[in-house]
Image (cartoon, rainbow, N blue to C red; front, top):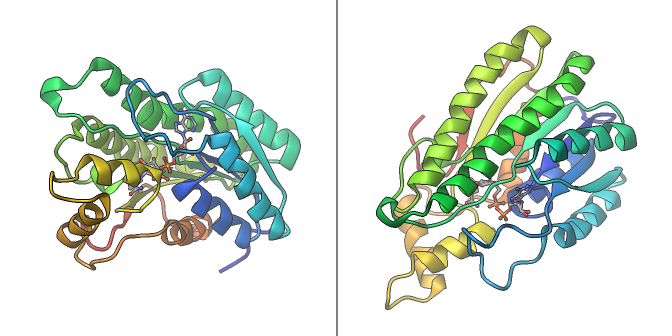
Length: 273
Ligand SMILES: NC(=O)c1ccc[n+]([C@@H]2O[C@H](COP(=O)([O-])OP(=O)(O)OC[C@H]3O[C@@H](n4cnc5c(N)ncnc54)[C@H](O)[C@@H]3O)[C@@H](O)[C@H]2O)c1
């Protein structure tokens, strides 16, 4: 595998969790990295608890990790729900780090809610970040990637983009949409030699899963017991996935010259193809 030395990558939601894993893996492979994130996730339709650290605060730790690898790194405040923010994050990346080679659309939110009682706000926020955010980020980056003649887009979908789950109809629908968008965009951008793929992570104990393990806790369970029960019942390989697992696939996709339009699971065997 060749090195990513001299390449520039931009990762939305890259401050922590899966995005941090991808940012560090790309930097280890040689890329300079821009991290785009927001300090606070909208609390109106989503509850991650009071322990959550703000995105821009978390980004400082990730930047230090990347710089310690000898790579250049910048953090940018950009809300992927806003067209202007996505345009500015691409412009700032190119201005500060150089021409863009790799876009990773990773920013995402989740919220547990049965359809019967789901608020429109919860539905709209989920689609605004998880689906429209990917559309806007890709749209903003396409001219820069086209100029390189060898671009790569990686969208972070989910196993929830391949199979349904109770209380997550809005989240699943938003992620199925990402898989379809990815396949269509791959065909549209193939003549420009821009490859577009999705990664479908399984279950990773990020801030997002701290919320789910708490939310799916049975009355007689602790959050730890809830987490272990879900792992045992959902994952054939019996273990959680890690940000490093997802980072490895992102590095592979950044190199894979003949892979496009795919949505690849890293899920311990949970979902179908
Ligand atoms: N954790 C899992 O098990 C899992 C499984 C499958 C898919 N995913 C997906 O992976 C991606 C990362 O999830 P994670 O588990 O690392 O979650 P996380 O909550 O730890 O990280 C998400 C990051 O996105 C940022 N973000 C949220 N809204 C944003 C916005 N509007 N603009 C810019 N940044 C925003 C957050 O600040 C945070 O840094 C998401 O798209 C998620 O749906 C996660």
